[in-house]
Length: 383
Image 1 (tube, rainbow, N blue to C red):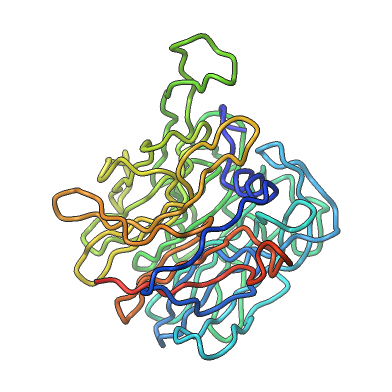
Image 2 (image 1 turned 60 degrees about the horizontal axis):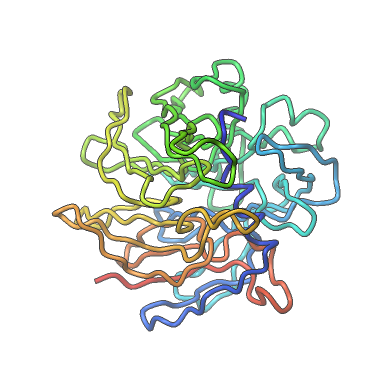
């Protein structure tokens, strides 16, 4: 573990087991277009207009390991890349199934298929999570080596390995501390793609020939220690950045959002901009909490998806619901577009100008009495 933190993976699992009641989806501009998904995370539109969502799966009854956040997770091959009808008329269809997945018993808060992006040629890049050192994959299962990697995927279901991010992180470890790789998001940038590694606290660039380089790194920041951990009044602890999103701003900059690590202070998450040539991240917008997704609309307005609302407190779920979709206005102010979200996992803006968001992104499919619809994809109309 790099410093004092709990990763997104541990946060969502703890919240799921707390059995908090999800808020109702009451806003009239919101439509459920897909349900029954297992830990849905990233979304992306292919060039042909088809919408795809990643399902991190629900783990399985295979070998278990202890992840970097000290949580035990067990192996299965239950992850998928799934096609979703943006109109909601047709049922979701898994175009790639049997991807590796790691989860605690019950399948909540799985790691596996996470970020997805498509290039103009129709080839996608899919980021596979891990939240551990690359060596932890050894002996887990037949497809365990795909965890911590980026896959090249096609809309018809073909795929191949593109880059081993976890192995590169283990060999280079760009931010001091123990090795820990958790590729969460991926962005297309010309002939290369950029990976936000939430465990490594870095952005990695993958060239067309597969060569990986460190594009930017996010150092820990000191923040006030929460009272319940027993440190003296006024003490600070290092808060990890935990970058969970990266997008091409189409303005000469990349933009990255941070979840932040423990103690998940409200208002402490930033949106950074990074040169495509690398360098020190610059704060572009601040005052957010637990960022999990970013997107620009056709008017270049930035939308920020928050998975939670800060630390819940000792003995409870680490992150408070609700999640929120927020627009950053031209003057830097923030407008909450929709806030009745429960642990959303990803965001994209469609060709129709609407926001598409995964909701109940910690749920391993339908759960009787708690999450009967399982993970969802929502269509949220924007003005």
